[in-house]
Image (spheres, rainbow, N blue to C red):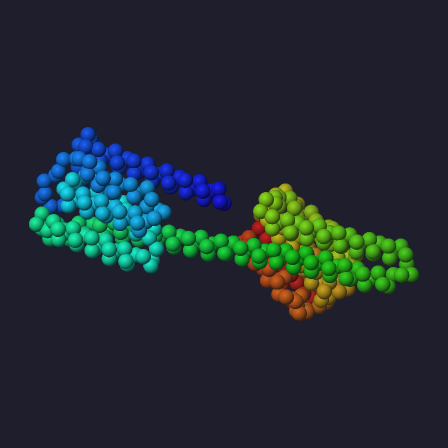
Length: 371
């Protein structure tokens, strides 16, 4: 970031220095060029004082970004001498460039003071050389110089608006990322911890059956290890250099998810229809999260009730239906509200549909997810 800013600053300095050198070269008398001429004073030949005037007009352009106020004041002084002494060099063009730059870079507190000083200098020049031109000519010149300042001010306003837009966009991205990580944390911790709690509860009643007790404790251990793995992956997402490709849960992990929930004491009937899409993209991940959240809620709010999980794979869509039979209790009751609300937003972001609520046989979660 810092190196990029330094490179940009060096590039701007080189550009300003190049523009200054080019304008100085164009002011050489050998090129026979002439610049701004206010009034009808005869042009004086180029001499050593003309060189001083040209340097006063042009050299400040090299520092117009760093010291914009001082730069435009020195340029204005050079321009005033150029017109009062009737050199009429091309260096007078630097005044327009300097005014644009001043309007762009001068801070708000200094603007009115600087504009007042420049206006006073212009009026002084007009008074000194008033016999050389009509008032209409001076007024037209002043309006032209004011227009150059306004152009710079408009550029400043446009840049400020763009910076504000980028700031809002960055804040929106940060908010979205925080929300996504909060959802992932909710899904991981809620499911795995809930499964471990019910697996441990089951183990308390199996002390007299060592074989079943051992398998239950193995399930608790496996669930805990999976929770640690998922949490590590979630923390890795905070690393900007982390490559998350291939690390998110996919449809292929549904068998493990169902088996883990069964080990926690939830009777589950799991069926799949159709052929799994080879590359379903984000649809796979969202499908997994829908089933995971529905099974977690079944464990929490309808433990021991039969649960039916049905996943249908079509060419362009994946249909998910999870029904906990014999209960109409909302799976979001007493919870944080992140689960179902997060699922709905995830599915709808992909252009799918989501619904959750009781029907005549139990509590049902359904989703249509684009593959």
